[in-house]
Image (tube, rainbow, N blue to C red; front, side, top):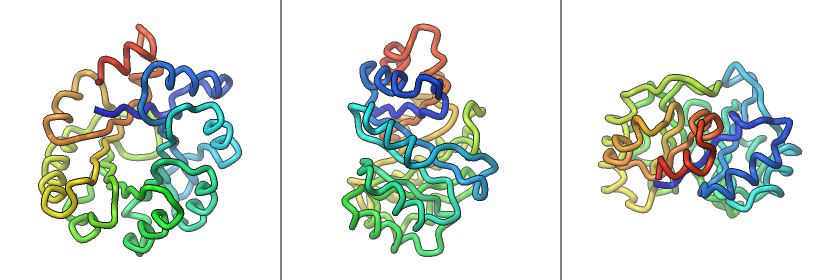
Length: 213
């Protein structure tokens, strides 16, 4: 299981230190939530802050775009060379084109599905994707309660992946903890995003990440 702590739950007054700390604690990716205030009712960080995060990080960035204009934001963040850029199926008219654009920039393309979106929408897109991110909360805010139907959705997605593109990863974002990590693994999930669980764990970041792994 790969663990990608979401810096949305970090102390932004000490962001560089927080990023270094989760990397030292054994995370695999640094998850960056980008929100535009239109696609979701919240705004977060732009490329200047993410550039600082990239400098502090010793692990690759995993950029999750929760935006209406994917083209604009991909162009904005591509120069930082994250490992993944994820865009929402619900906000993109041409997901195949967007996935290919991201790959052409030397970045691994990922597509995100909101909790109500059927996994089957990915069937004819999987060959163009390196990862599918399933939301297990409604996007826009950290610290939300885990929506259990993501387990079944991950199982259905895994069946499609095995037929269409066995190298495609499944990532889950929202409400992940030691209470549901075993179910997620059994359902075929490869990567988990954990914000509150990691940054607010009483025993510290290293113990939090180790407990998920």
